[in-house]
Amino acid sequence: MSLLAVRGLRKAFGDHVVLRSLDLDVERGECVVLIGPSGCGKSTVLRCVNLLERVDDGVITLDGLDITDPRVDADAVRARMGIVFQSYNLFPHLTVLDNVILAPVRVHRVPREVARERGLEMLRRVGLEEKAGARPDSLSGGQQQRVAIARSMVNDPELLLLDEVTSALDPELVGDVLDLLASLRRDGVTMIVATHEMGFARDVADTVVFLDGGGVVETGPPAHVLEHPRHERTQRFLARLR
Amino acid sequence: MSLAGTPPEHDGDGHGDPLAENLAAGASSAHVDEGSQPPAQVAGGEPWQPSAIELERRAYRRGRTVRSGLIASVSTLTVVSLVGFIITRSSGWPRVRQTFFNWDKARDAFPAVLDGLWLNIRILLVCAVLITLIGLAIALMRTLRGPVFFPFRMFAAAYTDLFRGLPLLLVIFLLGFGVPALRLPNVPDDMVIWGGLAIVLSYSAYVAEVFRAGIESIHPSQRAAARSLGLNHAQTMRFVVVPQAVRRVLPPLLNDFVSLQKDSGLIAVLGVVDAIRAAQIETATDFNFTPYVVAGFLFVCLTIPTTRITDHLARRHGWYGGGPSL
Image 1 (spheres, helix red, strand yellow):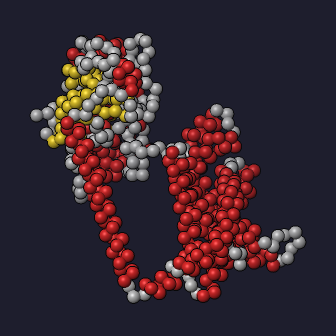
Image 2 (cartoon, chains in turn orange, green):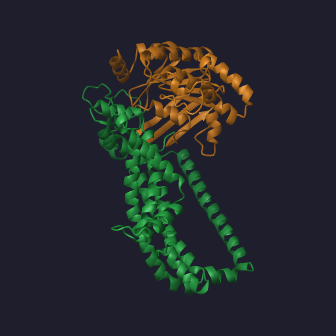
Image 3 (spheres, chains in turn yellow, blue):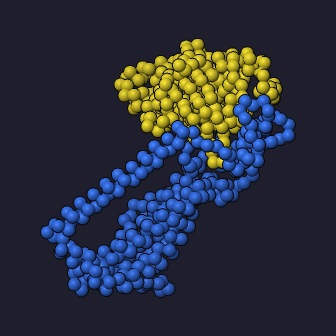
């Protein structure tokens, strides 16, 4: 059974139908990369999966549990996932370490000392251990985004959602973040990545999904979708990026 | 994707359809897997039927809403009747009702108290305008940079320190009783004017601090952007910073305004016949305190609409910042 299965997902904002009927499967340990033009619904998919948006129709199951069921505890579902946003969304009033250990301490009731160890380990992992006591706004964008990734990973989420995490970064800072994601990938973290970084999609993705017109246009291994797209829309989209 | 209205990109098919249209039209390309629908049909509202599972979810949510409403009603009814029962059955209730909630007394006192309230309202309106202007001026004085303006900055700081520290009642006594007693020529001896001035002086200090907090909360990048366009300090304040600051501090300003509505009653201590003083006079004849209750009721009636109306306006015009976001 897939870890995540999306069936017939529909989401509209007012009259604007962003997702018409979207199907998507993510296996355990798989890295799925969503690509597509701006406004195609990449972020909306992630936000629906994280229950930040209420779906208009369709079903999303996480490990067999229908998480779109209103009877499901949304907080408990979110605690099983991590999400990283384009604009980092770190809490400016907390230190870097406190950002990372807020959820372990407050949600998962991990003893503070244990959480601290775990938080410092995560920060070491993202190469920012020496910044543990700093405030987020004293960090560069790339550093902030790596802290955000550490924050989302500290609870060992079953699924990591990454929403255009490099879009707000200066080009020379993008590399650090992408390297970090690639290393998470090697550790077998299941992730869904919405991105415009075709290089990352090519090197790291198991599956590339091209979204347009409110649904999946084409899906497959990066070698197929990116190098030999079958659909005209995919071809046109990729041609524009070259 | 960005929901905040970033300009949609074209999808590269050459004839420049905005992306939104493409999406709504269900992708004009024939290569798309799902059935593409004619644009005209989709633009207004497409023939989309919610699935059985979605209908079930909606029914469940509706059920929860109804259930919440029912629980709220039952809970409210129970609490209110219980409290009502306890109060009306307690031994002192008849005397309390006679002294505080005497209907005949209330009717008799109402015209006089309402008359007094009209004075409160007039004081309130004049004071509110003056306080806003003076408060903003003081706040702006503190933003001035450069050595020439040092005395202004110092004055503004000293003013707020002084009048936030002085009890309002003390200022009212000082001005209301003190100044007319000097019998200076060409100085009005009307208690209402001096009482009102005392309120203006005190409140301006508070409001100035609210404005200053708002001005300082506007990100420096806004100032940089304005200055880079060639606006000078005054223009930057006038056209960029203050408009944003005012919107941001509207809730605390409103709070001060509501507080002012009640504190306008403090000038009653000068012997001016406002709503509170009128109620006191009515009470003095027979020690029935109903007129105070009437005055209190009228003050509450005065403040509630102000809060609600401004709240409504602020929400509608999006003055409360970024709006809901997760």
